[in-house]
Image 1 (cartoon, helix red, strand yellow):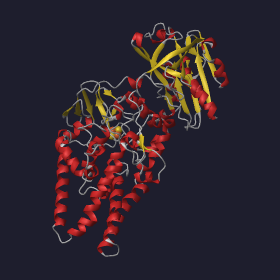
Image 2 (tube, helix red, strand yellow; image 1 turned 90 degrees about the vertical axis):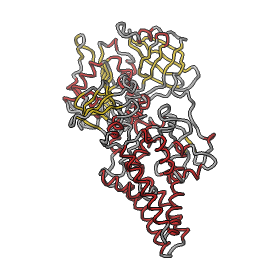
Image 3 (tube, rainbow, N blue to C red; image 1 turned 90 degrees about the horizontal axis):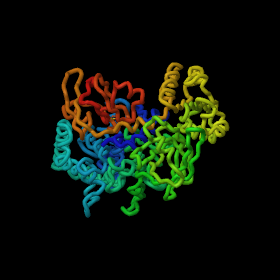
Image 4 (cartoon, protein in one colour; image 1 turned 45 degrees about the vertical axis):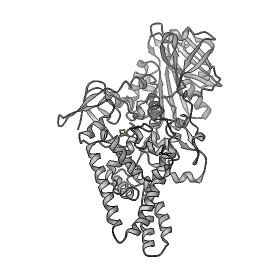
Length: 615
Ligand code: FES
């Protein structure tokens, strides 16, 4: 299952991909020196060592060791090529992957390797869907020996499961791969060069495959945790500072690779910093290199459960806006970044509502709720809370991230929207970052947290007439430098008029951030079947509930390029000419999703029964 199908995971992904630095992190150049050095090293070491041994310049055992190293090095270019992270040229990318990959998997091609590897990503840990599950839990007592025959295991896995899932094209390529591999081995092993072939290739390749399966699969996933149930816990990172970590070529932070698979290996570390380090805070299991099962730190099963809290203080900030302090009953802390919100579970009313966190610390968070007598009941229930009442909340989550690396900030709040922007102003003030804060309200008496707002240098704009603010959005937004980030929070009408003014004044969509804690979680219904119609041929293809549109198209022999199958890279974006899209990716902006004319075929689906795509 795609990571974006999990709503909590999708929120984290949205934070990462919305970081202004993300496009640079995911950029794949035509030529990456790091990828070329690895590929040339693998092929060069193998060629020189083999020649050296055959010519008698070095002992055979030295050449065997060097060839083992070459086989190990060859995995990373092959692997990154499967995610199109080697070169921006599809031809060069696949050529480098295929050529280098021959050392590790003779006769391998990208169609087969992509099918295998992408299913590992989509279904990590799921028996019968993840082709690599057996590498995590190899049969005892021959586990390591078993890993040396990873390719044989994949073929057996295909016969048992894959043939019901993968396209005919993959089956043909897999058969071709098998025939070629067997033919090459037979040809050499019955030839006069059988001994050199065995010592200089077969043994280093088998042992190398075992080492690759151990380091890049076996030690990277905790047993029994699956991507669909615990996306951030089914993949781990290596603890410690051992120089050995460098031998993993980025996979010591394997979780990063699973979250944003299309990023080249040498850029993984930069993902930790995106969205103020949100990924680091996802309770990712960790281990040391040779840890036994009991030494692997795996978070408890209640990591995502609602947290019981008690109301510890209630007071009216201004008439109609009530500040409510909540303390965790078990005393745990609830760290919340500026812009974070919590889901409040009002069990008695059977409601879940989202509220921005005004402040957090020492196991306590404070929310501020405006009473809406004609709303859906959530604010009235919140205003009925009394000190000592108990309820449950989610951990603080954040899809309104303050991207602190930006040079300047403009924060504009409408009414109660100040609850999300006040923590941002507080944070920017503590960082010494340049910012301006504007607050629109009916009148001075309707502005909560006035003292602190004034300490933050807020500009207060009160209505000149009922519903007419003294703030002129066009005048405020007329000057901008292309680097300032604009943060908006308030009623829908307020945000719509501010966004329209920003567009008129030439602000780029990537510079504008709005609080949308409702919209991300409205999607994600059950996976229903639908039909994809190809606009050019009229062909209709059924998409089953358990498959993506890309899978269904591949079944019919229609290839759409993909690189992540998680909705984070944009490789599979396709124009839609008719139909209502259920966007589930983290790649397209809210504006692009609202336009409804493009979709990520790897994760997004139809809201109705049919989508017509431009193919
Ligand atoms: S393959 Fe990456 S977004 Fe679809």
